[in-house]
Amino acid sequence: MITVLRLGHRAGRDVRITTHCALVSRALGAGECAIAGDACEEIVDSVAKVVAAWGGNFAARSEKNWRKYLRNFKGVKVHLTMYGMPVQEKIAAVRKAARGHDLLVVIGAEHVPGEVYGECDYNIAVTNQPHSEVAALAIFLHELGVGKELDAKFAGARVKITPSERGKNIEKK
Figure 1: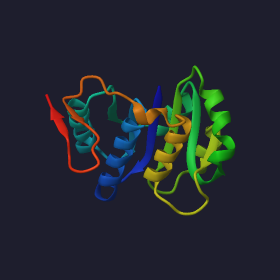
Figure 2: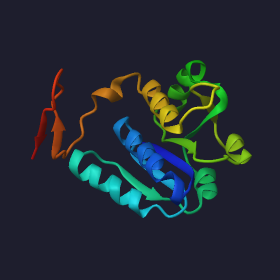
Figure 3: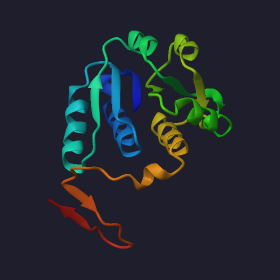
Figure 4: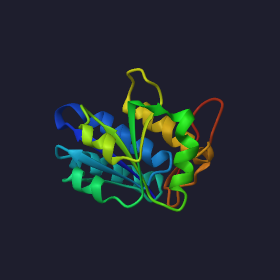
């Protein structure tokens, strides 16, 4: 299973971006998003409503002690940071290491403590330029899934979209 750990969520500032991190996580193959920082029940509830309507097996949750969680995580730990090694150089190694293991993808909201760099197996950059953690997460999960995640089916969906060149084709159950 892929878990995304969102570090440093700030309630007054990051609600929308953290929600987007959770939605990208779900859409591109993760099983959960653990949110560390300020209280985030509105995000947890919002994501639960999306899952209820759009299907799948995904949950967002609060993580009170991210240090303990990161330290005790059994599996492969990847930190997405613009200071890391290029994703295109390391993604094959990450895929190989993660085969048959759980994967934790760490993304920050603010300054990430130095200990995260040492605790993770990989520090990966999608670019060494300033950018959004949402973009980094999407690109990383896409590279990890080699595009197969784009064809995922979400069991239990009450809402489905039929692709269309023009207009919106929405099926509701």
